[in-house]
Image (cartoon, rainbow, N blue to C red; front, top):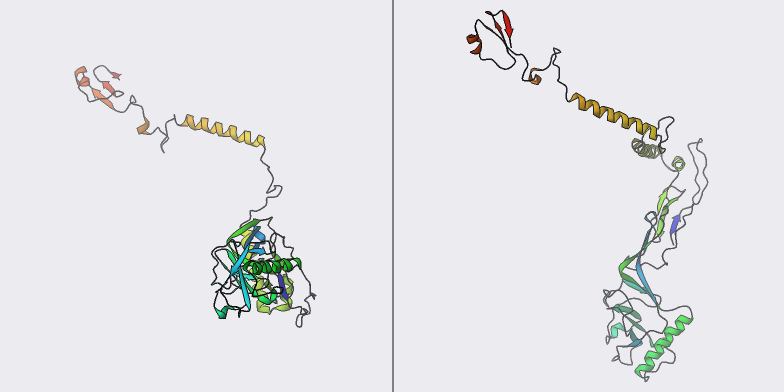
Length: 340
């Protein structure tokens, strides 16, 4: 269960007549029944339900005794002056073997306190229970056992205690022990909202229960419960949060849906064709020479047989002696002609 402490003072305004009066309201939060309601332990260990994550953590174990368990005597050397008598289970019943008889806050029971267990010490002559190595020990007043007799045998005393457990169970008040589990058990469920709206701004608080609750308030309540400075601060904070959320959104284009597919197969085919055309053009261009700023082919891209130099000679011997390259031109004055 979750309990919310609410101071039901009426809300009213005294200095702002434009403020609409808001009467007291209540909100409810339905919690999934995913865990049995076990009490928290004195050491603070408790079950936990994380609503918005859909996770429940069971940290508390439970055992209810009915007399069918196997029991034996504990502290059999205690004198008859003792007001209490102790018993223990003949086999481990508690899953957590790390709990020891020196601990007093790792378990609780319906009838007795968890106390340090020690036999043959008159200071320990009191009702209690304790756990060690998974075994459960119970010390109770002899007067709880019907017609208790010190002269009973070992077996008679054990049987009388088992009968007391049977009677408690039959009366719907069984001796029940809640203890800390060695490892939490995880239970999953469909996540739900963990938010509850309250109307007495700042006067509510969660005072019990294993559930993570977030309390919210309608913005209009600020006008009735806060100073002008508080109102302005709250509005600015909420405005900043809104602006941050808007900054992460895309703009909507008129006629287009943000979640619809407006890109057809026809458009895709057209783009694919244009892409192929561009690839063909690029391939063709790579085989063309580049032009310089003067509109002429760049010298470094000229072929080897291009005309580069012109020479002059007056005889064949002079022409043959020239330091010329393939593609150069020689003008023979003696022949009045041009030779390549």
